Length: 420
Ligand code: ASP
Ligand code: MG
Image (cartoon, rainbow, N blue to C red; front, side, top):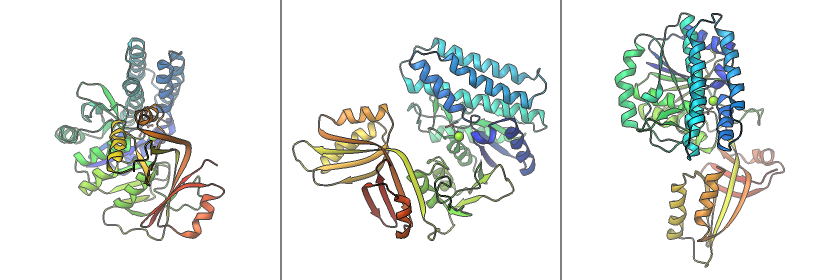
């Protein structure tokens, strides 16, 4: 069994979808599970729909471009206007509109998950129908019957026992008859509400399937040649790895590399399943292989910049030390609000945490600590992480930026940078 994942860019127009078909034909489909994300920037567009609905603005106007986009892709794929797919997609749009028209929900995140999940449905329905018409008979599978999660909407946590047993029981039988086409990113809680696994979560879905099926390998098809040591848009000298260890890959995602969803590696590592990140534009190139037994790439610095950071400095009002008890208070709130701490530092009476700016959640987090601590907040910061640090790199990287916090541990340095 193999698992493939195709992201939004790989199905962003009719040509791209045809290319997916070509890749499947060339690389073989037996047995295979194919996880596909929403087309192009559909998830962003659907976020706009939810936001408009939430603010009681005209949301149908925001649905129209999403419909037009999918219609234009279908027009490039299905000459036959009687193909059932036209009707299926039209029905999905009706379902989306009805959902929002009737929705009286007060939980933004719940509505968000329901609405953005349509992107994955449009996409997988269209790709599956296209493959069927081009001789690749496949089965479309509703992933929400398999990926079962808790109810932490927009960042749901997978119920591994249920999910893996559902997948292992049913999917091999279906895959024996031809490729399985399914959605990434979305799941379902026990009450049958849609959940999502966090933006870019379809990598993670693919890893969940690979794990549950004891796959031989997972291939993530991307618009880049593989995994690079830095973002080539920011660092033109970035190089591609041929081989990477799970350890290095997991660290890269932890520090903010966006090439893979941060949760992707663990399930693969747990079952020793190789991961191949390769280009759908140039499919014959090997890309990057990620496995347990590859040595570290110590000669190549890993450089990662994470934007949209907030530095929160908390100090005690009564000059008590920041010791266990205060740290416990802070971390209780960190856990409660699902805050992701990227860097932390404590001194006698103050404690600093650098976290992702998550809008409302951040505001609630700060409010929960205001009665106990004096709080200072700086927003719009960057977090630069360099592993296998080389002194001579720094000048170029920092340029005129000022570091407001600097941490060094082992072979890794991190700088919280002021906005430039
Ligand atoms: N479509 C979702 C997103 O854009 C999930 C994914 O692409 O992995 O975040
Ligand atoms: Mg994507």
